[in-house]
Length: 289
Image (cartoon, rainbow, N blue to C red):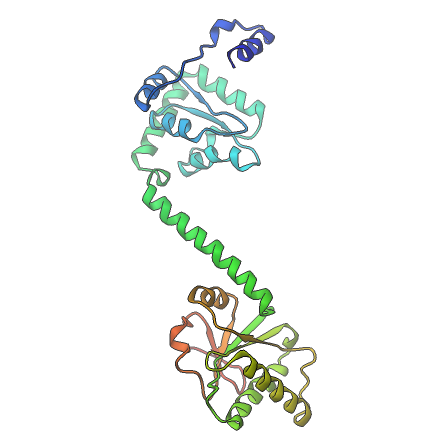
């Protein structure tokens, strides 16, 4: 490293003795002692050094960062944005050099930057609060995982632009079930966007196989007796047993619950439906709880 650095200096007709390389520093206290000797900290590119940057910022040492397109070239710039020190971020080699020279030769500018950095750090930036940062990261990962689950459920349940959910009470008589389903399917089949609708059916009180047979039978009867046209939609998907987090992910893609005359009163309280719009069966008019 020393030889390469000296060769670079010689190549630019600079005195190689102007570059001083330090031996390995043992601890943070020694690092801070070294930083006190500097006027400006130049961040490395394309891989930023976040620990060195934070230590420099803690000392109020003006820094120069060049931001790239890769994540490793954006770490330090993200910290400066958190501090609202946008003027210390550059996006090109020429701008990086210009800012470095400006800070290196302008003592007043360095002092202004130093004072502002100390003021910012006095406010305890969030990236130094590990508990707060951990909470935010946890929420972010949870959101990413929920989106992953929602995408997987969207594919398996064939979700569309508009997704409704129903919670039928499967313990009711076949006649009552048929009447409720007939009203729902007739209403949706008359919807102008029926081709973009998926009807989700809860089956928590019945096996998937029995639910599938019952639904198929009811749809066939409606097509024959009522001349119901469901060729273009809606699509009907049966919901198997889901975990709580899967329910949360699924409901983020559901636009509303359609009320049944007889509903599964045991299943509904276990699921958070507060954010869903409630639609009445007879005309799908929007109502609220």
